[in-house]
Length: 307
Length: 308
Image 1 (cartoon, chains in turn green, purple):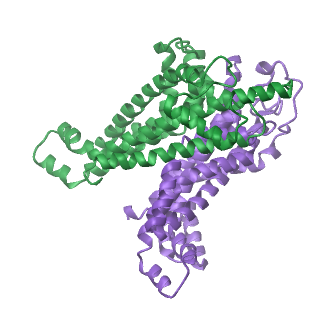
Image 2: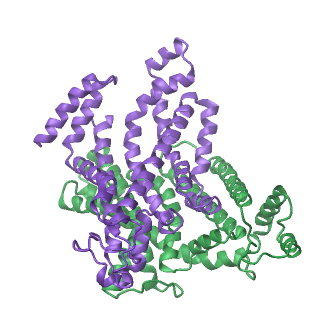
Image 3: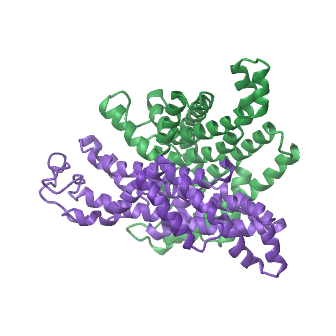
């Protein structure tokens, strides 16, 4: 097990390095710098600014300094746009918000999705099955940027139940719509996956044996069928998590929740290199970490996997 | 039912003339596909949406750039959908005809979807087939690269690319296509691993056919079934990516438009009571995705050897 984890980590580190190098080179190659304004600065001022942020050094040196600071001091440098803030400030401002609604979306998507899928499989070809399949097919064509306006239309404009945006320190009224918008399409995929793999498992011989022994249906489902049926679902959780982090871009733009997404888009538009790099690396690291956890979970549950 | 039966027969006889090997499998798959009502309905919807994109601009008296000055400033009252003014879907907030805009958006979204999927399919299939055929260290390295790329937060990279290299439809194609071939590569590799041990590959190898030719002539044609199924599921996800990016205002730029851009505009205007701006593009977005998913499911059921 330990060697398996180490081997997975050995993939994770080059992944992050490639991410750093790739985004750094792209940003470096980009026309236009962070200090291009309507009023062109005098060359001396420009030189001073570049020296202050280390932009006058060669690419390799800049990159090395950056990686060194990140790894050793966990310091992502100052922001170019927000003069008095560091990237760490911005990230620590936005990340808790994103993680809060991201976490709840994840919980909602997995719990609701799995329950729907299990119900549909257990009551195969009954009205419950059709309803569950209908919901999951319908939800699949409603990605977050479609759900967001629809939810606001219904709950804010027509019913007036929920505020149309804002965060207010994460009161529940402000979390509900972002969570629904973000989780719907993942819920649908999880439900579909669970249903099909559960159906396959329920037709297996050992389930028939368990039923024949006279075990109650509930015990058969939860003790015998659930674990193998959830394997494909678990491997989907990694991509789902990535999707939720990415979806935060839409959620933050639409609901003004002030998460990491809005900072990313704004700094991308303003060529705020350090903020973009910081957010890309952090989300990359989070993704890699999460995939690692999923892989370990998978290896732990699935007896067929040798590590 | 009668027409579809007839279509099936026509297609079957057409199949006899076509020089595709393994004819029975494809003919069989066609019959299965046309028996699936949801899939056929999806196919019909797709044809209708395609016709809407192709001929929609001849139906409306307005062009997509023309501003109807009569409704400007009072879009909520005057710009609603009506047959009399010729604005079948109403106008947008600038007084442009929404029907013409939706036609244009449909064209661009479908184009992005199809071309993006095409790039992904070609790159992914060739890459996966190469990795799977060579096996060993080559396979190991190539698939590690895929693993590494897969754990990159792709949407952030795509946004980065669009911001850095300018927002153009071309960049969108490249960015979306480059990111989305990874799944295809994995699928193609898995299939290749089982195909390459078949006798006909061995025979080709024995008579001295070069590996690149074996991959092109013998492996890839046998991957087609899986590739077709996956690509029908890829198109809607390409459309979703594009719409996502355009929703953020980073995708296609004015005066061009796409479903995502139209939905975004409609969503911004909806508190003024001009709901048609949101609902018209949304309708086309949703039915097209539905149709693609149904067709994809139908194809999978038709081509999946597991169910036979």
